[in-house]
Amino acid sequence: MPTEGLSMRFVREMLRLHHEAGLSQRQIARALPLSQGVVSKYLAAARDQEVTWPLAPDLDDAALQALLFPALPVPP
Image 1 (tube, rainbow, N blue to C red):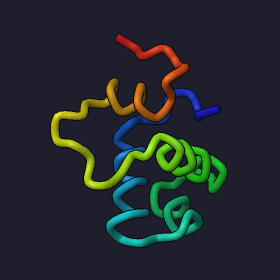
Image 2: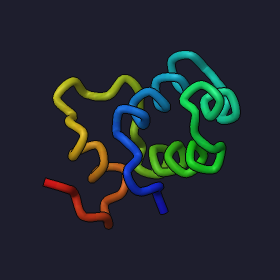
Image 3: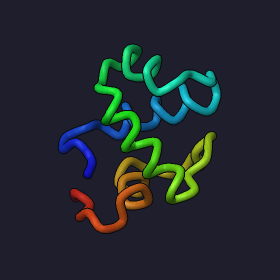
């Protein structure tokens, strides 16, 4: 489902731009730059898992990935 290798930094920025700045998926895709499909998939996963912004300060990248995509293995 997610694009392999997408940095959780992009995901954090995607969530921030969507929730804090109120940007559309198209605007986020242009800003990062990512495809609109990737932005849509990650925002849908965040919505499905009820991930809100701001993220907890102690939520590291591995925990964020596990939260968004619980069926995927978390890299060490």
